Image (cartoon, rainbow, N blue to C red):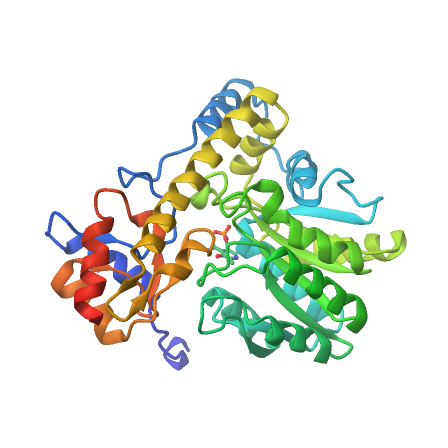
Length: 391
Ligand code: PMP
């Protein structure tokens, strides 16, 4: 039976990790994998997480089942950070824990489909797993251009998509730190987007995987909040895997906004059933640690300080790149206006290969770079290499 299966192409980024690991050159630079790195190139466990984990070891008295919704203390503790002071928007939001942001995106798409959604408008390029998840569910994707050539958002394209979306259609947006372009909407653009949703009735699905890594915790949630203030219903997929450094522990949450208590309960019960049929229950450990942090003022402060330092380091790298201006044919200036871990360089596949082979600089074939792979120690070499390869 199994011989009927078509072979699937391996994940290109995972292949890049192997190539990088096998490269003996001492000055190699890894801009491929999507994790934060310190100036020393490490991806450490947050000190606040270490502390919370120690408390879990000392105090956790059972690992008995929690249920498909996971750790509701975690789900509720996150809400003011995402939705603001009125954390439930007057009782209109219900949420559950998911295995990472990926689980939340999967649940959002599956529940939307169950509720009758036929088509989802989506900016491209996007996180590759978006298309994979939607394709796997059999949801039709209507793509629109996310970015303009000048490194800003193609606001006309997104507004056009929202306005043209018919009943039973959704629009998937990144809440902040767009992956792979780093191009976020400005506050003025978010206001236009929120108005467009209000007028069109299209269903918003907002994927927020990097809150706090762009402009700040509040700033990075502002766009999402503007949209939610104007619409009756929406889904929010959330990941704590970057902003708490929990990657492999798979910490995420899925939230439903609805304007009717009865509808909200019904939607939540369906999300619960889908979660049960998919993974039964999310892994507990990471979410429990995040709950402990968010319920303790000292740990919360420690976490925010660590997040601030990460954001400041990435901003320093971006400012340095932007100050370099033109490197060969590549204008690095737009990277200073972009947010989060990723940006895209306008380089060809051949130039990406040359950067890897001749300069030991590893990046995705698409030209996506993880700016956290750059440090004050290697950034000049990177800029020189871009200039040489594209000049
Ligand atoms: N959404 C986007 C836009 C992402 O970039 C990612 C992570 N790469 C996710 C969701 C999923 O995150 P997680 O690792 O928590 O599943």
